[in-house]
Image 1 (spheres, protein in one colour):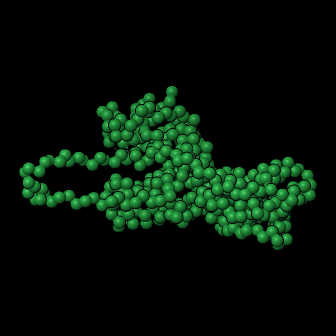
Image 2 (spheres, protein in one colour):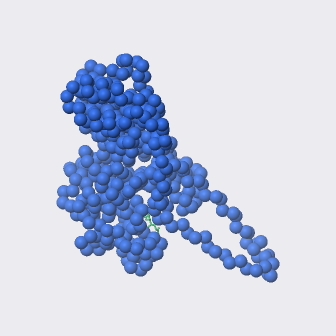
Image 3 (cartoon, helix red, strand yellow):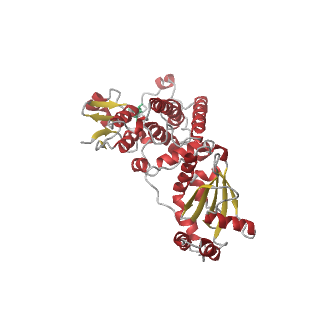
Length: 421
Ligand SMILES: N[C@@H](CCC(=O)N[C@@H](CS)C(=O)NCC(=O)O)C(=O)O
């Protein structure tokens, strides 16, 4: 039978237990008709959590409150669950990162965000201190993630679930791109996590905040008591309404999706190059690749309707572990999914020993790298981009070699070649 979780649908603390359940093969369902501010104030609810906060998980052995404890309980329902780490030191590191996610990341995001939502007093020096503490923590996290795909070991653990859910609040509500771009490995990590199938099933589509919520308008000073006393008796009494207390969860629930605008690339003049035809030729050519596919590519290529770009990873010296490097490139291609209709790419991982170099070739619809790709795929800024000059035969030849996975490439062996098509 499913365990019942009391939480609102968009509550990031509720997500922790739900995602842990996905990874653990445990069935957890949200309590129906939950209404924050109502359900959690009933005597029945207060018996489960005396401070009336969500989430609460009902179990056959009694209720559990505190979201991290709920996620831990769910993960322990599966014996030897890799979510909890696979050795004593890994278990300790999972706990370490859970505490870090809660006490160094979440707390500082909330100290920044809540006052701007009117949930607490807004004081500029307090905000400054919260942002600076958050940056310090994100800096440390960024360094850790420069050479690790996951927080602990080589797979998702409870630490990743809790960290991602805490970062979610920041990324979706207050940490805009201009803030997070200082932490490129945190960005890569966050977007990789939220796009894992078991995360996205619970979280749905995640979008980064485009603006920092404005500072709440200063309240008008209340009338001094003395003045109130001298109020003329015949002035009719105005009904004084208590300002409605903002609901905490109101800031966490997802907004209704807006209709998608048409992609401006669909409005470009038609091109003689049909991207799908090229992709089919690429996939179907098994022999004589140079003569068939590469020749076909240059016959089809339309420099008016498309552009070619070389990319070069900026942090190659960090590519010291082969599978971490391959995961990074794999994640990049996954995130480029949004450009499937408008792009083709080859990514080469070069070298027979670390540090590996990552270089790529991309074909994009239009004369420039599409703006939506730059905006939405943060990996783009981890690379230097150079437009291919097709009047230069040497550059054209390099394009051909990259499409062909020619080995050796620039004198070196290839560890891997991945294609985006
Ligand atoms: N440390 C708690 C925080 C719980 C919490 O702050 N819950 C909020 C919603 S995210 C709540 O229930 N607020 C309602 C209230 O304060 O009455 C956890 O992780 O479970």
